[in-house]
Length: 70
Image (cartoon, rainbow, N blue to C red; front, side):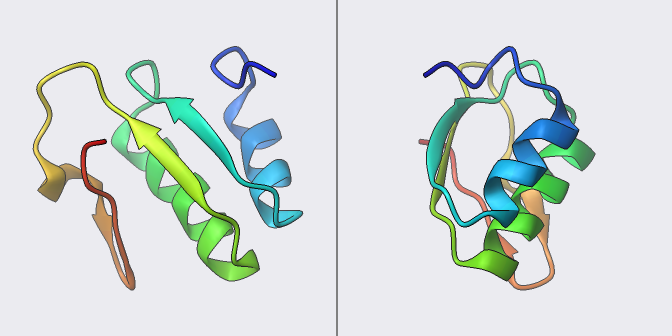
């Protein structure tokens, strides 16, 4: 299943359901990635964010979560 074409709200619902997935997150803003990661942290879902662009890991840090380029 491809997750890249899902809206941020859809991805948050999937993460809140506790389902893990890999997301090529280049089309998402840092705020959207934080929201998805926060939902995953609450439910225990494992999400792998793949960044194909040159972004700094610090752009994707939020309280209790650290997302590193995959």
